Structure formats: structure tokens, C-alpha cells
Image (cartoon, rainbow, N blue to C red; front, side, top):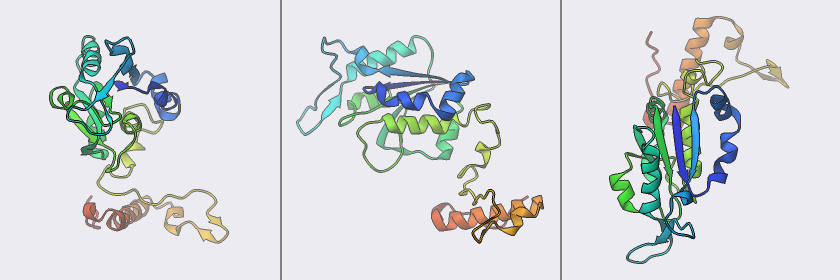
Length: 230
């Protein structure tokens, strides 16, 4: 998979590129992650990428010309299934959206900044808009990192245990159950006996029941029946 991220703050994403699962995926050649400085695609000697909004108002807007120049440059090399704009008013990012994006081969992530991007970019070039929450950040770099991380960890071979991603919260519409590790007794705080029993079927049922209870408590709109279907 190839992910190209367009930003006015490439250095902000440098730490994200070189740590943990994202670095591991790159080392295994499972993902090709490239950062593009929008200022490299301007036509002004001062490398200007923003301007005042027509009609007045506070804040600057990312200009259409450098964005389209960058998009056209990238599209000369390959066909992209999605050009995703990270925006507070986009479709909320959830596990289903991450799963879908992980199936694409080539994706562009466009990071907004200031008061956003020229609306013509959104209308004529962006294919999808995604939000990581109903709040405003200084730019789209952190949302782009969140989306990329959520997608990359789903790629086959990235995680050492490929079943791990399949048991994450929300993969089956349920919040993940509680997990415990050694010691079994810490200052009188005990691990549930069922998890020490070695009875795989009972443990699986316990985990499902706990997932249902947590979902009903923490995500009531997405809760499911507590009757497990086999």
C-alpha cells in the first residue's frame, strides 16, 4: 500500500513515520509512506500556500493552485483510489472506515490548515472527507497520522500476530473485553477465575459477555444482544 500525505508542516509528521508499527510496516515494505511539502508546489518566490478568503473574515485559506499542482504531480506516477481530506466536518472515522481504506492500494491524505482549503478542492478533487472528532485542531496532520496508523496496522503482515487486529474494539461492533496479565493476585486484586481455568469455550463466552456489557455501558447506540451466535 502507498500513502501520500500532503501537508504544510512535514516535520510535524516525522516522528510518526519512524516509530512503532508504522516503522515496522515500512521496514517490511508493506507500506510506502511519503510526505509532501505543499510549499514545494507553489508558483511564488516566497512559496506562499495560503491567502485571505474572498468576502472577508478572519483566518487564511490554503490556495487551490499548489494543492492541485501536487495532486497532478502524484497522479502522473500512479492512479489513486481515494484522495482523502482530513476535516472536522467529514465522515467520522470508525473501524469500518479504517477497514475500507486499508483495502486500497494508493491513497492521498490532504491535511488542511488555517481555515481549511479552497472549497473548489473539496468539490472537484477530493473523493472522501474524514473527521477524527467533532472538534477543531490547528491542522490535519494529527488526524492524518491517526488515520494512517489505524489503516496500516490492518495490513497483512504488519502485526506479529495477525489475529490481533481482528479482535480489536469495534471490529465486530463491540468494545473489547477487559484483559489481565501476571501476577494473578496483586495486593488482593485478583484476575477473574474463569481466565485461569483453561476452559477455552467458557473463556470465549465470558469475553463476549463482557464485551456486550461494556458496549451497552460505553456505546449504548451500538450495543448488541448478549446471546452469542455460533
